[in-house]
Length: 285
Ligand SMILES: Nc1nc2c(ncn2[C@@H]2O[C@H](COP(=O)(O)OP(=O)(O)O)[C@@H](O)[C@H]2O)c(=O)[nH]1
Ligand SMILES: [Mg+2]
Image (cartoon, rainbow, N blue to C red; front, side):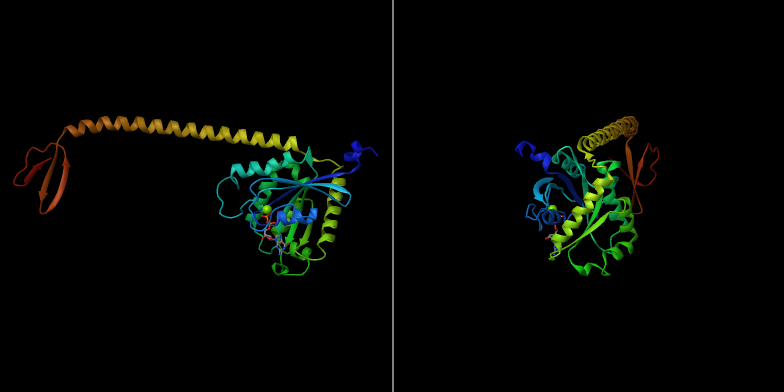
């Protein structure tokens, strides 16, 4: 066949890897592509990175994103604006849209409500429709992190993991670290993704839609910051005015000379006009 048909002959599968730092996103990307496409081991990914590969007769486009911190957080949003922006920028790297968002979560019985909320907040950066395209991908670096032997039991044993999986329409998969079965696990992951794609009628989560949402969010944020800044400035002006008024009052007071009394070894500072000083020692400033 003609080479121009090549892109239509080979089905594309675009995916974005999401997750907290050290969740194993880059390692998962490498497992899926079957190459060392992404840096892992202590290399902090600060940018969204795109790699492609031919796997099982499909052209895979895998985008790795910078991870978030689930701890040490306060305030309204879980991650700094720059990080959120970089995570969403992943949508620019995968043509017109993504078939799936893979939410990479280390499988652990200690998965907390806090971790779930933060994960949800990051999925929602991709808009409310993002949940239809999301699959929880559990990483198991070491079977010691499991209490029981089956992944299903582990998920069912933690209410927070269960809630997260439910938000993704019950979709999840597990990848065990360094086992000979890893390739098979990737194959069945791709099958699950295919199932989801079919359920979504072959549609993708559109990049333009997500990027537009992000722009609107940013503008709203900027407006709010502007408003806050103006409010602070007004408050400062008011404070300055009040101070000036008070200052004028002080000027009048300062015209009255302060008189210092020494009394039984105690110093008393009295502001005002004292007519009679009696037998006390008197010093004027
Ligand atoms: N033993 C083992 N280590 C893993 C596995 N997946 C990730 N790691 C290690 O966990 C650390 C974080 O993985 P990485 O993929 O860089 O996480 P990221 O920050 O989410 O991209 C690295 O030191 C990896 O080598 C795994 O399946 N088995
Ligand atoms: Mg990484």
